[in-house]
Length: 162
Image 1 (tube, rainbow, N blue to C red):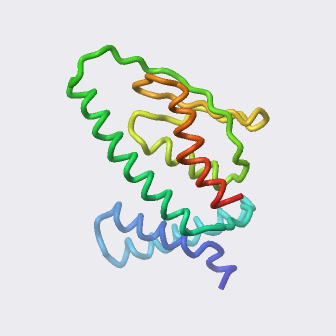
Image 2: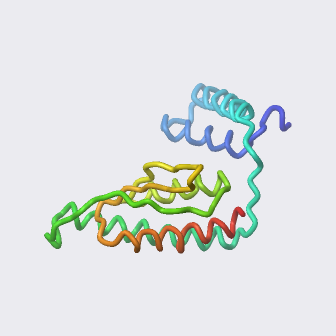
């Protein structure tokens, strides 16, 4: 079974995504989706991904709650900037953050968190120096961003993956 479906959750996710994107449940689209799901799973085996070991699932749920609240707050803040409330001068900029996390899944999840939060963007990660560069739409205090990324996100990711 693992040869046919080496990554069953990924294959299932690809099938569901295909069906949602096509907005139909026809037999033809279902067959095409199954082929895409199978091929997508097989392609992942060529990448030779390391096994992900989630050490504390409860911390993962806590992190999900924190990220959800941060995304809601950030949406409101960016919406206020776009609409023009608080007409003070906005300064965008880049922040360089030293990271301790080494797990590739933890880094990938951190990239998803930062990029999915409106007003921030993962720009670059230097693996040798372990430095992350992000872009912030409304940069007021660089130190606050470093404390936020390291304290709110990286600390939890270290508990989960390292």
